[in-house]
Image (cartoon, rainbow, N blue to C red; front, side, top):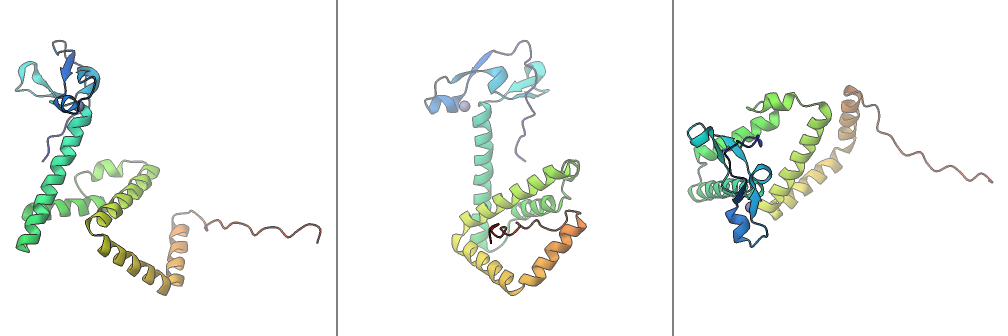
Length: 189
Ligand SMILES: [Zn+2]
């Protein structure tokens, strides 16, 4: 697991007020000496002096590094899978966790279930967009083929799909889809 940073807490009394972010410095940003309280994560850490530690990088670079590490790990695992033709157990577990998450049964299920319905809708929509972008990036040709299959399926089963959509809307109490009223005929006919 990646180390997770707890949300910013109040700055301990003996903490330094300013700290250098090495990445900000490397990028030639000005300033690179940043206020600890607003720009760094402060994490409870019992084994550290004072019982806390300050993140090595500013919040922005810290999260960029977490994302980069995650990406590198996924690439390494995918590469191993391609070369050996076998899915590494670690990768299988990541995929299973993702599936669980999407089914709302993972370790985060409680947090997800507790969200208000409009937030859930928002999350699902976002997940869909991300997943699509990810697939597209992985293999544009395969993605286009999948889209074409989808279109074909829609063309062949249009009536049935529309009936299902109407049914779902009824069940969710959303009522029929609003159709724009046709333009009024001219008054002076
Ligand atoms: Zn930085």
